[in-house]
Amino acid sequence: MTQTTWKTVGQNLKERLGDYERTVDVRSTGMVLFVGDGILHIDGLNDCKLGEMIELESGGFAIAMNLEEKLVYAVALGEEDKATVGMHAYGTGRVLSVPCGDGLLSHVLDPLGMPLDSSDRIAGAEYRPIEMPAPPILHRKPVSVPLQTGLLAIDAMVPIGRGQRELIIGDRQTGKTSIAIDTILNQKGTNVVCIYVAIGQKSSSVAQMITHLRDAGAMEYTTVISATAADSATMQYIAPYAGCAMAEWYMNNGRDVLIVYDDLTKHAIAYRAMSLLLHRPPGREAYPGDVFYLHSRLLERAACLSDDMGGGSMTALPIIETQAGDISAYIPTNVISITDGQIYLDTELFREGIRPAVNGGLSVSRVGGAAQCKSIRKVAGKLRLELAQYRELQVFAQFASDMDAATQDKLLYGEKLTELCKQRNNSPMPLAIQVAFLYAATQGMLPKDMSMKSLILFKEGFPDFFRINYSKLYTALNVSGELSHANETMLRITIENWLNGKGKGDGDMDFDTPTANCPIDENHPAAGEQK
Amino acid sequence: MSEEAAVTTLQNEHEMEQNEILLLRGRIISGMPLSIAARKRITQNFESMLGCHVQMSTRIDKKLIAGIRVEINGRAYDGSLLGQLTNVRKMLTRHDKEEL
Image 1 (cartoon, each protein chain N blue to C red):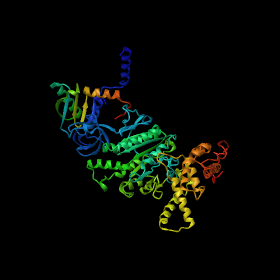
Image 2: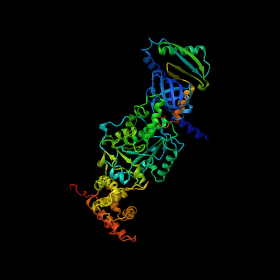
Image 3: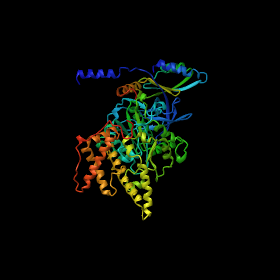
Image 4: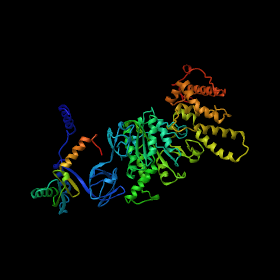
């Protein structure tokens, strides 16, 4: 190295050590008496506080979970095998904090904020404690802005708003994670940051999901926090709180963030394992007594902040796995009572090929129409009721031989609605297409004798037709979220054009006037509104 | 925290306890063997700081390189060269003001 290089190195060192003071380091100290299953029993640490970070002589860290008269029970973080009996432990006076900021986007992290996808440590804009109080009541405002999932069945029947907590609940392999992933994919171009917290899942599943997000270009606005089944119960326990702390940074800076906890059932199981090892008294189903508080304090941090507080929001999509469809079990009922609604995925519907397998009867959004685009609200008002009536009639039709014409019409109508609500995996539907499909179905534009094959052709062919040939209307519906009288008229013409073109049977389309002549009135108030 | 500040803090903390605690046992860990005079001086300093009698044992830990670390009454007072170098390492490798 040249003299200049050494000089530069020296200057860099001076800058880094500019405020270094030679001091006597005074810390509370203790000794590790027991190590087992990730739990440390530490003697000493007289002034240790609950949740305090404890530094071990080996360089590892632990969190104080139980404070007793003579002992501190701590859970080890990360490398537990380095802790040994007789090792010294020192109090740090700090709680566990994680890095936050835009630098975390597109990365896969562990619950401590360490990158799993690169060797370089990520510098966050700041560090936030993983445990923070939820925003107070006066800092919040009602949920009013929709968060589009891109799934017709959900956006129409169980709409989600920014700042809402909507539970996704169902048996294994019913599409819970798929709904969450599709929602993340649909946030492209919407300035909504996404955080996906994987708790207790298979590493292969997480890897597959990350690859998929990367291929779809979603990792640019997404951070993945991973605490797989191979990680300790402690890491699985802190993972959702770490993700929440990172999401809060965006919310407090006036941005909208979507966080997915996949899944909280495994989170509760990890917490149960940890609590039993800490000798905390077991309650119902061997869960500790504060298992409700475990999830309530996490989910209450998701909010829609008032304009005075920056107007940011955190939308939470917790996932719960049920056993044999039992939503009245302990953990599911706990989380249902905390959240602002649930999306219940039915195994039977899934097996019948209705995917997403949303059970409209058991699914609810407590925010409801306030979190729905006006256009969707206008055309999908009775969708849930009509589908419920169809399901009832379907059971009846299995036993009845002769049915009146009205009943048959309802059955055919219900079949069409059900088919329209089906959607392929990883294919989020733009708002304009959702409005068009629902409008076509609910306004009776689909012929009664329309076969399922024709309906499927309509579903597959109409979106491109609409987007390419009526791009101005398509953009207007996507952007404004409203269905004005003029746009409604144009939409009707668009659908009729497509249906008539397909009606010719030879596949050739005979379109109406080109895009430039379409009278689109973006500022006209919607029909029924006061001028 | 400077040594003076630490002493002041300790004096405040132990003021109420000085009539109750008669003898505290601690340990001096040093990188090199300590002379009897040095050991005596350290013991007397801690007696004045804690306001009670102090009985110190000694241990040599070459990892400290130089300087001493005193562990007494649930606290560790680290003035060793190892401790200083650890602090320097943390300052050089830190990315933000706070980190794990």
